[in-house]
Length: 453
Ligand SMILES: Cc1ncc(COP(=O)(O)O)c(C=O)c1O
Image 1 (cartoon, rainbow, N blue to C red):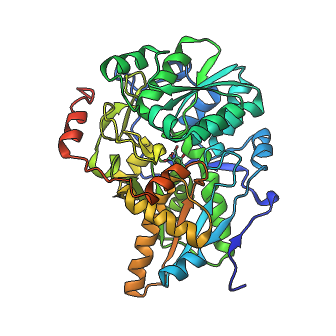
Image 2: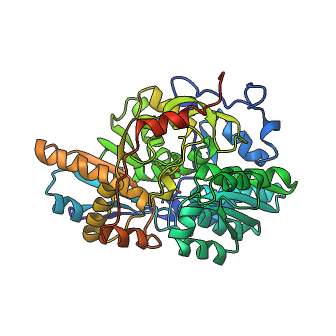
């Protein structure tokens, strides 16, 4: 059918395994280090924070890991997700390119985050964990984990970055609807939060601070564990169900991708879409350009350094080798709250260092303009985070218009923006500004990198 828009899979065609890219890479990524000994962390170091099953997945050398049946059962509520051909956007742009987007906004929480929230809640429940703590930027991750915890009867405390807590009250209400407790971060409830509030009473917060608060509480309560919505190997692996489905759907459309673009906060939706295609690229079967898109306000790939750094602001986590702006970096409170993280997935950082992917940074006004164009053509209002991916798709498609190339562009539209309408309202009112991030601000934050690693 020449005018087909949606490529859908049956539930029976849903992948039953996640893909672990590490054994297929030319070299393994550098290990996380213990902040005290500076030696690679072992399972015992991570046990206060994560269940054993997830620790084993974090270091697994297996290429494929079976998705447990109870997780598949919950995935069936919204998976497989549709792959769309963006015919109306293509027409509006007048491009010969073919644009496809894998839409993850059909999940209960409205983004890709439940793909990992559900297995994380499942493995914790199997190991008898009564409560989880976590951070959330935009509120997408917090609401995904709140949904997942409700499925398995686990309590959840969420530290929500102050700027998002104020910008996105409906995300907080959604988390509470699913049964979670939500605290603005920095909060007076933790030593890490109090330290920030003492120094900066008006702090708008950051993901790094919220992680410190959630980790501090999990580490101090025996039946409580911590859950992270991005960055770590097991999280990116859970998200590969996106790319595995997209491979089948693109084949049904008779296309192979020339360009894959995705927004990167900690790297999970991008890695989830890209890794199965990167496997095919490494095997020589396809040769797409794979491009990460980050916000100009928090450009860890394009302006950060590749170094060992803490995953959180207070320095509680293991040292991770990653592209980082420094764990003390506090990004401007842009609306794409999920992209305001000082670091990047160590696995993606390693892959970037190997030259297997590239990265660009985009200012938020260009992204909202792209989000608006997408909403007015395709009908779906993208979350502020994937407007970065949409902006990069449009840029590529307009390049194709000039050159006449019929490239196939694939992206993850990783969430809808129906609870982010304040951001669109601000954009329409002309009150969204692109603040210049100076080298000095980055240099100052990088001065706080841990020495001697
Ligand atoms: C909708 C959405 N997209 C993207 C991200 C960024 O995270 P990641 O890079 O792990 O996909 C977030 C994070 O909260 C998000 O909510």
